[in-house]
Length: 439
Ligand code: URA
Image (cartoon, rainbow, N blue to C red):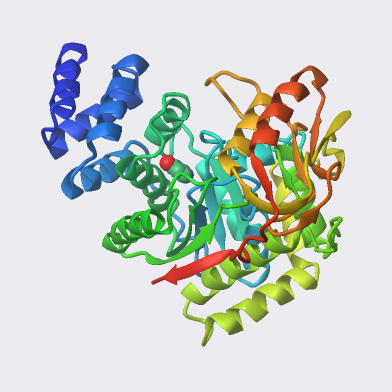
């Protein structure tokens, strides 16, 4: 295959269409370890640069699904629904909406990923809980989902092994922001997990892989067409990543924020707003879409009320605690950083814009994410946000707090964070969290 695969790379490099067989052989060979990472990197870059036709993308999705098995969820007696985000900074809604939707009586079997590029990953967040095991057998995955309502795992050798390898390679080879690669990565995981319905949170803005609303809508349409061809109910929420979500970005910090929200706590920032409000609201909106996909509610508003009730009653928190326990996690031992450092405003004015990608990269410098495949995550490292877009600040006010156990990294992260926000005398237009919902 090594010599033959070089020909396939050249074919894609020269903008020719790969056949379904060639794509299937590529994915099978990489999954079984017959072709090396360096050749697959070249192929991914050729795909990134030259794109894929619809037929090629469909073949890639199919090959990646069949690189492993599809979960048989027939023993789970109800509507199975999941959510997947295209990635953001501080984007922690999965940890809240899984428990909310489960507490509302539905089932959320979730296969998630690790951090990708500057964005955070659900698996890394959960693994900041000491003992939490995201590598359950498929049998256990189904059992836990049936018993508790939700279970979170990663791609394994059994399920989506191709995505497990390609995802890790894309993370460090500049090949993330590609429609066909994103479609195949997301849809292979979601089709393989045996769900009936899926809600996509497709992000746009400086912290998203899709920088504009138009790009996000096109990606959503491509993802939805694939889901529909597999008879899945699907809806896409197009949401903003022009500012980080919530109060924290960083693994154990984000778990802490989720638990606080599930305890119905608020955290008032210096400008009087609740710093958890956007995380809470997006989690509820996505939960409502998930519940409504079941066909059991007359409207999204009714589904939203069910989500609010599941959250406010404390039942979502109970589900989360049970799920952590059964997956080996010791939530009461969630670690906290030993050191912190404030990053302050240099001038007075309104917080006009964030460069959220730079904020994510500052997190990687702190070891909240990976620069290379084998980098070890520091679970307590991350960034706290004290302001939201449009807030008025004075010179010297704290904009960010860096948290971590490696203070020698703080100066470099501070430099990036200083470049990652703009203060202006002009008040920016009000930030809108959800742009639109596509059916
Ligand atoms: N989430 C995924 O699972 N894959 C991508 O490529 C992007 C976001």
